[in-house]
Length: 276
Image 1 (cartoon, rainbow, N blue to C red):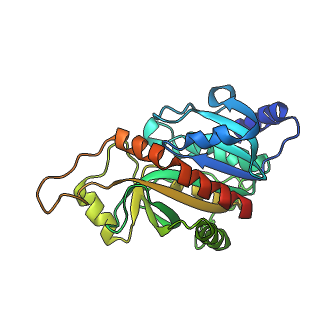
Image 2: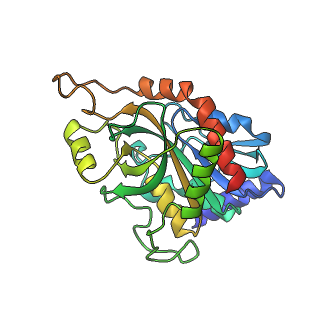
């Protein structure tokens, strides 16, 4: 908690009274949205006491405070991952500090691989629920009641009224919005075809290497949560298995799809911010 308080004090000094209404976490290839903030105050993660450094490609590694549309926001331009070597508590420090600064809602985004064969790269999936069988939880260890309860309920993790607002926003834009279950894998290796078959059997529509720890920490802290996944590739073994020639996955494919989809994705995210 000491590191969080130090980070909060440092950021309050930098922000001169600015308080965010919502925290936005931008995933791989989606960091461009932070540059859309009006009256921005950008703070590199390395300047914030106790913050780790984001090492994932495509993650700028800074907090950007400003206005998106009509909302005061705190944008994480890049996130922290378990696969970078940080423990689960450390990878959620950004979400926790932004909650301490006043953010009541978390809008979390990610780039994902599709398990559902009806999906295609470029689709946007509204996260209805998640599966975490990794055993990784940011709530492991002694609970600080200042942050939240010992046993937080996860029945409505992705806030139902926000999900409805996102559906309506997509409809107004004439945009198809998928809705499904996101399954968390720790990475950094992509999943095997057998793991993807298991994910499908368990009810997953998409897989990825982020998001779940941040969402758990946000719900622990009493935040409302909306999650959007950009489908950047079909997961391992989903395509080509019948011919016996499995496509290899690459990080570049993820970044290329995010770049090609950024206009649609930013339109939807901004529309969602207006109604949450």
